[in-house]
Image 1: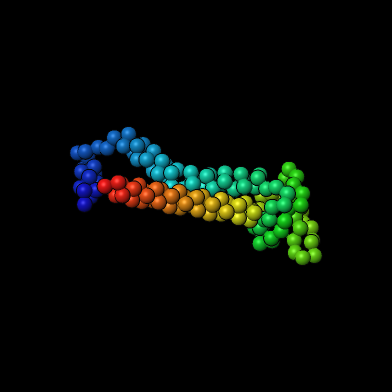
Image 2: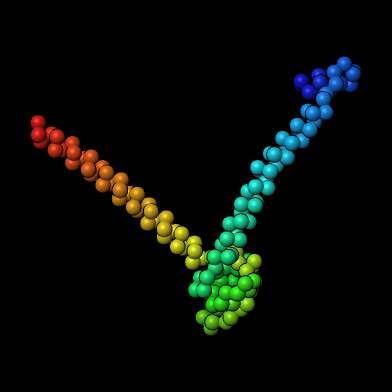
Length: 140
C-alpha cells in the first residue's frame, strides 16, 4: 500500500527518489545472494577438493558413476582402483570421486568414540557428585 503511494507521488513529480537508494538496494541484493547462494557453494567445493586430495592408497571410494573400489595407485590427476571380486583395475581422474568411504567410516568411528567418552565423563561426574552427598550425610 505504501509503495503505491510512493509511486503516485513520484509520478506526480512532487517527490523524487535519490539514486543512492537504488545503488544501496542493488548492493543489499548482491550481499543477500552472496551469503545465500555463492558462499555455501564455494564452501562445499572446498570440502570436496580437500576430500579428493586426501585420498590415499587403500581407501575405498565411490565414483560419480557409482563404481565402488579400493585405491591401488595415486598419481597427480589420476588414480587406479580395483573393483569387484575379480580385482579389475580401472584408471579414473580425481574429479570423478564422489565420496571416500574409508574416511567417512573413520569419521563416524571418531564421533562414536567422542560420544562414548562424553557419556562416560558425564556418568563419572554424576557418580562423584552422588558420593559427595552420601559422605556428607554419613558425617552428620
